Length: 270
Image (tube, rainbow, N blue to C red; front, side):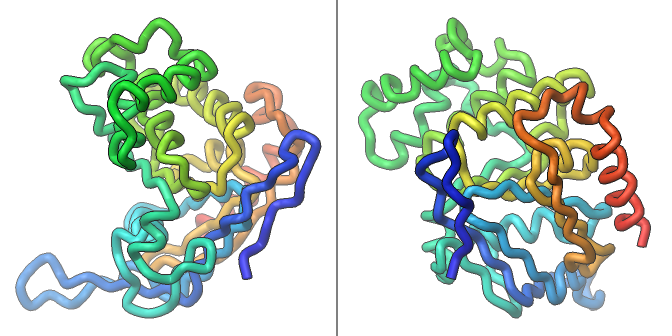
């Protein structure tokens, strides 16, 4: 049975759809002929409650993106069981979640509003109606007046906002984010982290966010899962018991945050 985040004054209708990964193993053929198979994940367990944000960190090559693709139904594990909302089939997991890869993948010939509305069009909504539904999110998330801009005319941070709005407009309870800000400079990245926290407060979802940035993970998440070197498995789960909203400057310099960062870094070194 899925866990469910409790109702609160700010979230009277909690998201019920959770994600469960149990005993997950995944191996790939070696890159060269005759090379031994590569075991990316082994014995990985991760449970995410409905409405919870969990960040996944770990060393390079430990299977973070593979974990996300298995959750999304883009890959199947060689062993173990993956479910979203209790649904084990890959097609069901894919239908229940929205996956945002590292690159924004905006269509260069569509304006920003058209790119965001694409998620609705793929669900069968007509183009004009899809744009009408997407419009209010542009105002709410600071993209007003940029609806007609092409991707090449937008900054990196604004492109990521459009990509995230497209992900939200798919209407799924579960968001799977793979290094969403990895390509941004440090100043823009910090600004986008704060923006994403506010966006998720306004549009609650169940979230798994993969990142290599420990500070980003702790700032965004309710809980951080630390993976071992390959084959990846969860070696520690760190609750982030810092009240929201979290003003970024005050949060990341606070004593509680600094202690959590040290704990996470120690876990990564094991």
